[in-house]
Image 1 (cartoon, rainbow, N blue to C red):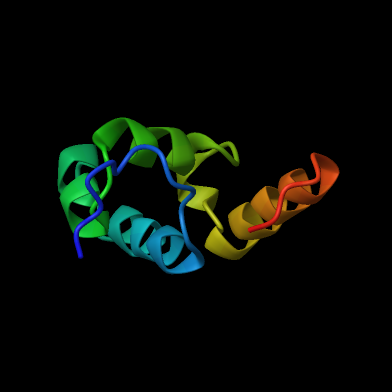
Image 2 (tube, one colour):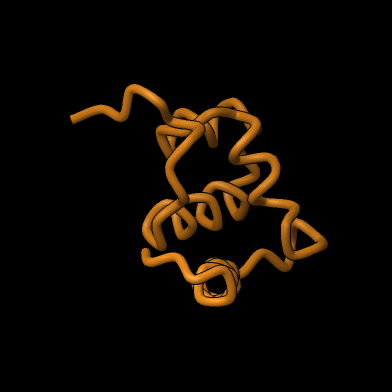
Length: 76
């Protein structure tokens, strides 16, 4: 089922890996958004979240997200 609100739910590790693949292929943010099935703004923010785009690490991004959720007492 296609997510009717693609900008609201947290990214999954699979989506983060798709972002990494798209960045390696030098896709535009619009192309990446289509590839991942998310809003362009979500992909843009996520790709820059860890600093330099060329250093994007989906596993580290997921770990950071999970740690943040633990700090705020939220479950995945």
